[in-house]
Amino acid sequence: MVVDRAENKAAAPRRNVLTIRELGHERLVRILRAANGYLDTPPEGDELRGRSVGLLFFEDSTRTRVSFTAAAQRLGAHVLDLASGGSSMSKGETIADTARTVAAIGVDAMVVRSRQAGGPGVAAAAVSSPVISAGDGRHAHPTQGMIDVLAFARFVGRADAFDLAGLRVAIVGDVLNSRVARSAVEAFSLLGASVVVVGPPAFAPPKLAALGCDVSNDLDAELASCDSLMMLRVQVERHGGAGAPPGYRRGYALTSDRLAKLRPSTVVMHPGPMNRGVEIDGEAADGARSLITEQVRCGVATRMATLVDVINGASEGGAP
Ligand code: ASP
Image 1 (cartoon, rainbow, N blue to C red):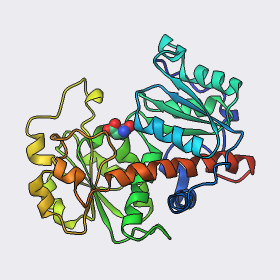
Image 2: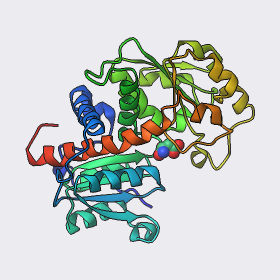
Image 3: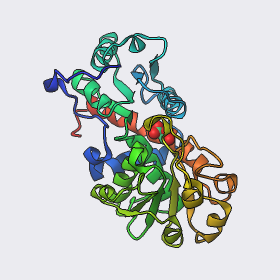
C-alpha cells in the first residue's frame, strides 16, 4: 500500500478526529460527556438514520472495526466496510485514491486505519467528508485514548467534569511503538492527570519525555504511586517480528507479585489484544480491579459519540 501526497488541502474537512491534541480540551470533554451519557442511557437508534459511515482499514483490526460498526449501527447509520484484503486496497491503490472512491460512492464520515503514520491525514486531505483515525501507524489512535480516559474517569467518579488532576497513570511496555500510548498520554495529560511511561530503555527512551510525560525504566518503582496501570502489547509487527526482548517479563510484566504491590484502589487497563503470560497475567487481566472489559464497553459509546460529533456537528456547521 502506497501513501501518496495530499493534493487537495483546500478541501480538508473541518471536523476530523486525527489526534487528541488537535481535538483540544473542549471538544474532547464534549465527546466524553456524550459517550458517558450513552453508557447510562442507550441511544434512541435514529441519531444517524439515513447516514453512512465508510470503514477503510488498511491494516488488520478486530475490536476497533467491530466497535465502530456496532456504534454506527446502533445510531441507525449504514456501514460501508472496505477490508484491505479482498479489495483494490490490496492491489496497490493509494489511500487517497481509495478515500476518493469511497467519497464518490457517498459517505458522511470515513473511519481510516493505516499501517503507515499519516494515512488518516492523507485520506482527510483528499476528501471533504470528516475522517476519524482508527489507528495511524505508531502515531495516534485517538478514539482509544478517549476510551481509556472515559473508563478511568468513570471508575474514579470524575466523569462529570473529566478533571483528572491529582491522579497518576502509568503506561507500561512497548511505548515507543505504540500509537495507543501516544494518544493516551495526550488524553490523560489534557485532562490534568500526570502520566509516566515505563519500559526497558529500548521501548521507553528518554526522548519520550517530549510527549509531556515522565519516563521510567523501573516498573517496580512506579507501582505504589499510580492510580492506573495500563499495560501494552509488544508491537511485534513494528519491529520485524521479533518478540519481547530477553528479560522483558521479569522487568515489565504485570505478574501476580506486582499486582499485590499496587494500592487497593489502583486499576489495571489494557487496550487489547492482550498477550497473556507476556505483558500481563490472568490474575491481573481477569481480577476485580481490571477495567479491561469496561474499556471495550466504553469503546462503542465513545465511537457513537465521535460519529455523532463529526457527522451532526459538521451538518450543523459547528466549529471544530
Ligand atoms: N489495538 C491497539 C492498536 O490498534 C493496540 C495493539 O494492537 O496492541 O494499536
